[in-house]
Every structure is written in C-alpha cells, then in structure tokens.
Image (tube, rainbow, N blue to C red; front, side, top):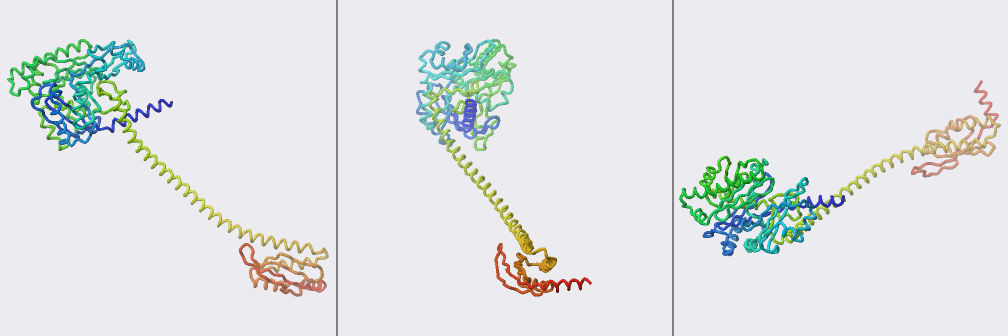
Length: 550
C-alpha cells in the first residue's frame, strides 16, 4: 500500500515537473542554426520564440566540427536577438552520428533487463559496436513485449561521445544548458505532436528528409522505427546546393532519390505485412521544395506526398508571423519545433511512454536529472511549506472563530438562563413568604389548646385580617389574653392596615404595634414588625357572637 502511494506521488511529481519545465529547441545544421520555444501542449501549442541565422560556405557536417567558433557566435547572436530567456535546451545531432536499432530479445523482466544493461553484457551480445562501450552514450527502451511468443522489442540508440560533445560545446559556450540530446530524425518525428491531424489513424507514418547533409527515410509503425539511409552522391549534393541548377538535371536527381524511397516503402510493407503506406511527409533543408515535391509525386504514384508543415496547427503571435512565413519551405522548422516539444524527464514520467519521442543521449543525463530534480523539489518545497503555513493559519483562524462563536452562543444562553433564574428566584421568594406565613400560623396553632372554640375564632380572625403585602411568620401565645404576631411587610401602610383589620375582630379588644425594623431578604427590603393583640374576654366575645347570630 505504501509503495503504491509513493508510486502515485512520484507519477504526479513527474507529470508536474514535465508540464512546468521550459525548454528551447536548438537545431544546428551545417548551413543554419534555428531556435524555437513553444508553450502549451496537446492541441493548443503556441509558438512563443523563433529565431534563426544562416551560415554561409558551410555545406556538410564537418563544418560544425571545424568551425565551431563561428557557430558559437551565431548562436549567441540568435539568443540575444530572439530574446531567449530559457537556458535549458534540447539539441539535435545528425542521423549519421547515431546508431539506431530495434533489437528482438527473449522476454525479460525490468529487473533482469536492467541487470543485463548494468553489466554491459546485453550490448556486447546483441549489438556489435566498433569501439568500446565507454565511448558511447546509449539510450534504450522497451517498445513492446509479446508474452505469447516470449519475445520483446528493444529500441537501442547510441552515439559516440566525441560526436555529441561537438554540439554540446557550441550550445554551452553560447550560454545554454543542454538537458536533452535527440537524433534529428526523431526530433522531426516529435514535430508530429504538433500535427495530431496526421496521426489519427493507426496507419504507418513515413518521413523522408531530403537535404545536402542528411538523406534518409523514417517509417513509424506502432511507435517502432525503421530508418534507412538514402544514397545521394557528393556530386548530386553539390548540384542541389546550386540555386541555379538545371531543371532537367534537378528532376533526374530527385527521380533517382524518389525511386529509392518507393523501393523502401514496398520492401517495408512486404517484410512486415502491413497495409500499403499511402502518405509520406517530406522534410528538407533546401529553401525551396516546390519542384522537388512535384517530382516526388510523379514517381510515387498512389502515395500522398506533402511537405511537412509543423507550423500549420500552431498559434502564431503577430510578432512571429513574418519571420515564420519568410521561409518558403516550412519543413525547415520541423526538427527545431520537434525539439521544442521535449522536456527533461527528471522523475521518470516518460518511462511509461514507450516509443521514439523521449530519446535522450545527453551524457551524464542522470546527474543533470538529479540537479534539476533538486531544483524542482527545493522550489516546490518552499511552495508546499508556504501553502502548509497558510493552511495551518487558516485552520487556526477558523478553529478559533468556531470556538469564539460557540463561546458567544454559550454566553447568550447563560444570560438567558440568568434572567430565567432571577425570575424563578422572585417566584420562589414569594412561595417562601407564603410558606413562612403558613409555617408561622402552624407554629401559632401549636400553642392553642383545644378549649377552645374561642381560640379558633381568634386564629381565624387573625388569618382573615392579613392584608396583601404582609407575611405573617409567627403567632406567639403563652396563655392569658395577649397574643403577639410577628411578620414581614412590604410597607408601613400594609402594617397599619393589618392593625386596623385586627381591631375590627370581635375577639380582639385592642391591637398595637410593638416593634418595627427594616430587613433585607434576597436583595429586597422589607419591614419586620411585631403586633400585640389583647383578646376580648371569652364570655363577652361569645355573647356578641350569639347576639349577632340571633
């Protein structure tokens, strides 16, 4: 589970690093240096930079090796004039400097294959190189595995380090940092990423380069490449380089060339038993190819031949339209545009993309990848750390806000409960007052002896005399004709009313105030009082009741 999680994380980082990396394509040919930079991907490519300079009196690849200072100066001028700010570069080397093979091997696991590669035993057995392996930069990738036949196809691409270094030194001295080295034929193949309309079907794709220094055919079927040189004599090369070449002679040279192309197409179809190849893309370094295209079509009847225009589906900014259209032959940009689609694969994203679009012969590419990986991780580490800080701060803010809101709600609830409590306490106070009144009456009744219908009349009279606002707490009767009443009143008037009411009772002769004081009870102020009542003689009181009854 943990390994799957790590793999998914690495896949995501791989894709992210590839998507965010800027690379400028650098195509160095004997007669011209071209630079291009693209933005976007899939079907939404935009040409952001384009610059080129021609180099006179340079007719073959040896010029690049022998006059490297001139190429460094020209490339530096192009970088400055084209306002190229991206330093990472994808560089092409000629097909003649590369060894390209599709090797059929017994089926092996990735671990077994890597072990065979690490011990150099694989290449010694299946690839015959003229020099020591240490003198080559090698790229390999499994194209497909056939478990039914227990076989696998392996793409092998190699180039001598000396040949690569000539191009890398020019690029580095001009101030760029090479991160990808591709073979020119595969760079042109990568330009097909800009022309998805040409690769919609599963039919084989044929690309022919026709030029002074490079002449070959590349056939791609299910991403398995077939490459073969096409013979062009030195005499024919010199004639083609002359812009004033005789049309008849020009046609003869192109016819011979096109006939070789036709033979190779037929041979490929027969060998691999595939459907006929009915379309061919022509890429050329010659400035004008209209006549060449017409001659090709005459020879290759039944084949749709067209000049490979990689700019056709690209968005061109206004400032680059004139520079791009200044070349009558749009296929001269095929290689540099294909290079501009490349990215440095620092996390192994292209391990899962088989085929010919991720070849990299850069020596010490693992060291370059590690450097770029550290740059990427450090850059994104800062971003991730910042994001985490922001997320933590946001979480803390919302968490504290939530807590504060909860506290506010609790305080509102507390205040409501406090108001309710005070209301209940007032009600409780009233109940307690009534309770004390009844308690006093009960206590007073304990002192009454049963003689006494008279005393019952006294008690009943007292109870009926208590006005509103008076709480009777105690009735003290120790015998004789005196009763002392004690209680609480909300005002003096209520006490006076109580005394007046007592005076009107027939069983009481006289009622008078003994004591009065102010007391506080449950945050309220009351008048505490005691009243002395003189009882009427029982005979007199009873006679009054009887006479009233008669």
